[in-house]
Image 1 (cartoon, rainbow, N blue to C red):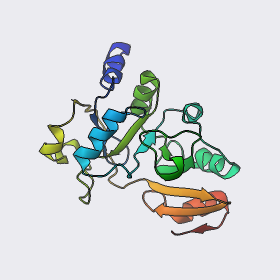
Image 2: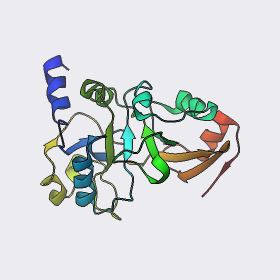
Image 3: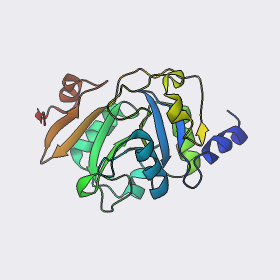
Length: 203
């Protein structure tokens, strides 16, 4: 993709814009991770309340510094084995952001889509994202499956040659050296155990 086209796609995320785009898992709704207005819009569109955190998509591990998260040996092992990929790691940040969960937690993922990572890199900051569906409804696995009511409420749609795998990312939380699997998705608990060799628990 030409630099001008990449700059245009990154420009879709300016200010408080909400953007619809495919990922390696499902179709997502996203905005800049620090946009209070954009994140509030996404929550209204999806039908979730302010206590529901949004995932944070990054282009490289350097952006973890901007998120001010506390890394550990175990989180580093998970990143090395499953990023880029379908693993969301819930980490604690020193700061509270509009997309944060309780206790300043952030669910962070590096998508396995080079173009999407380049867009995030061009934006110059992570993006907050969630699946493009109404709360309680199945996630859309193609842009054509997204409810028209949702499409009418976004500022831009990014459509590139990508077919999401249709499975959500696996979500893990690390506490006291214990892995807790909040949601098992594309990556199985067996794969996680094999990579880490550390006991995990279900919530």
